[in-house]
Image 1 (cartoon, rainbow, N blue to C red):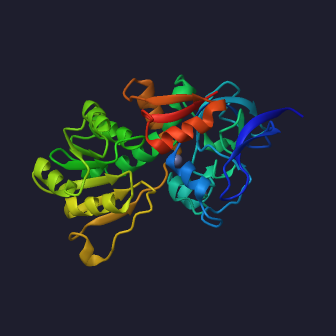
Image 2 (image 1 turned 120 degrees about the horizontal axis):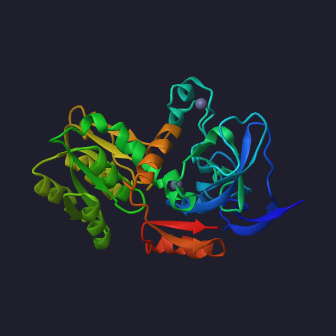
Image 3 (image 1 turned 135 degrees about the horizontal axis):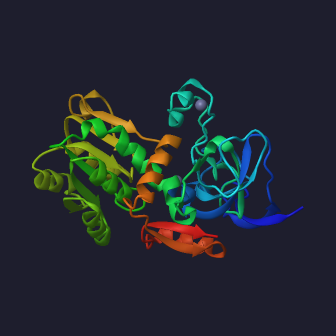
Length: 342
Ligand SMILES: [Zn+2]
Ligand SMILES: [Zn+2]
């Protein structure tokens, strides 16, 4: 049996390690994807340190939930994919057949597995990954190595923004808190798809400079007076806040800068907590947990990237150096997305 290297969680609370495992073969309705790029994500760090029971499926499993590559083997009954197709692999484990899935709301699947590949099922930090065909979304001519960050960072931020497009009319305002791996994409989507005036918040100066280059009209260096500064530069409260950090101070800032009918969209798993209740939000305020994305959204962002409308910035690491990649992620020294290339 052919084997391959895989970077795996062996048990909860124990550092992951390289193991030699069998190369997968596709069953009916499945494909095998030869990995081209795997993004490293803050949630991987969460998985590495998670207590037993936090995530639904126990180790062992291969890490890596931001995956793209080329179809290398096709199982029986797969109609829409052929060997050689470039694909993004869904980081959301939807069933594909429940009422929500058939309505195109795969991120709200009745049987949603958070997340699936790389968190429960074997992920993409390996030479090959076995996936259900409905989780492999074709990306046309887009280079799968460059496209990998779209599978999670680019798609999570796209879903968050796309859901709010009806609110982001000309004359509206938006704030993006945390303009690193996810937020830098959100700024681009807001720039390309809306007429909203955008303020970016971060604790790192050079990320704010990037956000400005990518389309943010205003920037605020996050600190104790962030909310006041945002209200100053925006001339009042903002209509929609996207929090890609999700820590207690950023959640607090987010709530503090919306006005009547404002929306706080949280897509960062920062473990923060804020008191919640009717009187804690402005009238008609919304507090939204934004999780996941859909295959249709994968196709839309792949099309944007193929047209040259998205900057796909990453810091590349060889597969052997995956631990260096995670270290850089922990230290915050990564430019764009930390990306393992094969
Ligand atoms: Zn992730
Ligand atoms: Zn479903």
